[in-house]
Length: 137
Image (tube, rainbow, N blue to C red):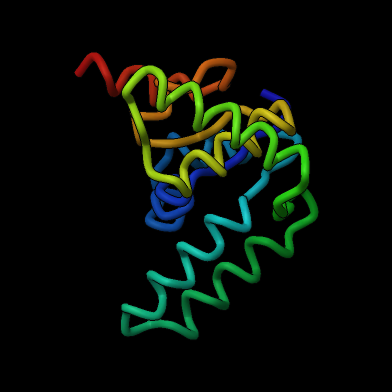
């Protein structure tokens, strides 16, 4: 796997020491985190009691050489629109933030590392193998 995009929950799993996510991060040439996930993380940090500590951990993580934050582009918006329309037609909507994250994974040809099986509803999205197993458990 050459590049991955971590979903918000996978970043949290990594921080908590999950070996499977950690392995994917270390085996990847490049690791992205969506600006959407960064916002979700900051929202979670605000609700917790360790705001400064959590921000520091995130900043150090993002400062590593093989890490990057994906911003929203016009291409992301086009892919987002297509995905949203496809999900609407199928009657299988998923959370809006997750559609943005999926659009960025498609745009960058990254494998999405997530623990959410609802991403399986999105065509053309490369999803981490472990997430695929979640639907069969």
